[in-house]
Amino acid sequence: MFIVTILIITQNIVGIGMAMLMSEDPFMGLIAGSITLSGGHGNAGAWGPILEQKYGVTGALELAMACATLGLVIGGLMGGPIARHLIKKVKVPKTTEDQKNKIEESFEAPKVSREINTKNVIETIFLLSICIVVGTYIGDLLKDSAFYLPTFVWCLFVGIFLRNVLNHLIKKNVAEPTIDVLGSTALSIYLAIALMSLNFSQLANMAGPVLLIIIVQTIVMGLFACFITFKLMGKDYDAVVISAGHCGFGMGATPTAIANMQTVTKTFGPSHKAFLIVPMVGGFIIDISNSIFIKFFISIIEKIT
Image (cartoon, rainbow, N blue to C red; front, side, top):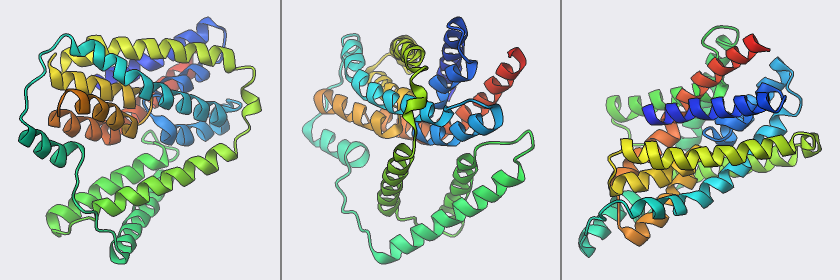
């Protein structure tokens, strides 16, 4: 959590700083910072309308979606080269074929049959509905308070609470394969609707400055992965795989991080440590930390403008 928090702060300082140097709106730099890079399309869709309606940032949603999409592509492209650079500095552990297959089946490429049936789908949709309804209610309740966060963060909290209650108190197993399928389907539909309804002509005047910020953010992400993530995670093979994954969700999203790590492990061998840490941090912890620091930087921008 410490590492991703440092990256979030760094991305926002770089984005806001560059925007101000180019005499652009600091909010544009914040959008081209952790809102869309560490945050991805989910944060882009949540914070874009807020910046547009509450802070008067014209075209904030279009800009956020464009930055998130560009970051997603870059995050997928840079993971491999970063890993290949770092792999020269470590000793790749030797793993027997039997050990490799067991680790891959457990952590990296599970081959268990995915049972998805009507009962599981109905139960999962019911649980998702509870998360959405309760999370939206909490978000509306705290809308004008110091605890205000985007609605999806509260839905995430409700989901975590619900999952722990079901697993540890009621001893009810949640159908993870069904959640994966419904989640991927919902994300695809959301992105299609969001991108189709955007007016990208509003980005014409901002294209040059934003592209320059994203280029610098890419360089910063590469240096961060090599000199901070890699070193703090132990400077070993697991750290190499984690660094490649960090490029994925630090510039895009958790699925990109997983794809980056799978590319590395297919070539050099498995890393179950990386596949335990990265999905948890990239899929959950980063959203909470990011929302807190986005609010912090918004308050700073309000003071300096």
